[in-house]
Image 1 (cartoon, rainbow, N blue to C red):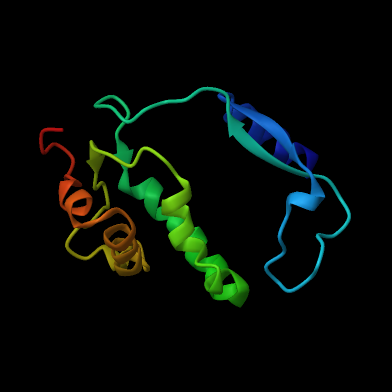
Image 2: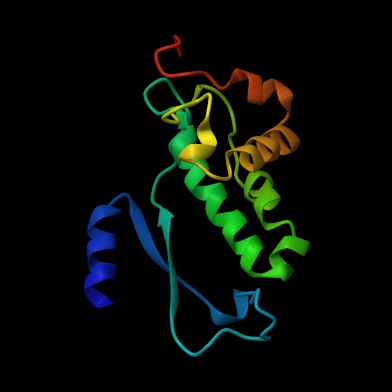
Length: 141
């Protein structure tokens, strides 16, 4: 496990390893407290804004929201707490340019099984105008 964490830390050099106090953790499986141990996350050391050089990339949004939907599928308490919706409302700076880089945009469910759910969340949480502003690669961002 230590080797995996080191490899991850080496890859995420723009991020800082930050300890999470156990009291700040809400368990989604019904337990009142997390298991014994230390808990960490990688927090950004700098703020990067959406730009032509660094657009929002749909494939990354898909990874994040798919993870949220998996959590909701496994833990009913997270579904009640609207975990996936909270990803959108607790993340800031949703704006364009936003590139839809899914492999097959006309049939995204082949490669992103939850594409329809993700698109619905984007529309519901960020609005139709933002959803319509997501462009395809090479579409002149």
